[in-house]
Length: 295
Image (cartoon, one colour):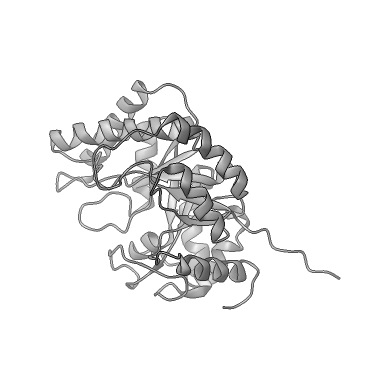
């Protein structure tokens, strides 16, 4: 009797947009990606040059040539955005930047834009959540209807960052109260650093049951696949290559063979050289793990 082949989730990596966003799909294809994450502008600046009409037209054409389904591509916001900040100047810049990034995602037809919920800077969880919700709703009010959801990312909980307890994400989604325009991105390194263990079948079941009960798998739209340089509960956001950190192979095998994740696009965010050698190694390891094999 033949064993049924495993359903392989869409797997990819964060790709550079050097030379234009339309250059990213070919880079992804060169390492065998079936999913992809990108920035839609310089991630360490508040603004940037616009996406040209030519780039916007070429982007879906390049995706088709790369064999990457548009629904498996998502963006990540710039790192300066902090929608929970009590500082009005930072808040105003964050709102403007988020609106701009949404419009860029609309141009490209992206289904999701991942954002760290933000840091309340000592003013308290409840105030931070309220600020994020109010500001996100204002951004949504200024935007036309579009294909892109805001995906709130799980975080390691460093400092005053929101998003380490799953309850933070649930409360943020409830406060924003726009279920048709929001969702969640789960980062394996971040949840582990926040204290959610997934290294054994029992720990994995416990953590994912908690996630499903509090956040709901219906809200899950993207996954970041990163091992962790630091141990469980460290609150340190430092990514490591797959199987080389404190999470180890078993955590990724459990996730990749979990039917609830079968159609969720997944992206690496690990360091790599110009030839993207590490992407090739990590993706091949993930495929073997998804097939139930070892390294």
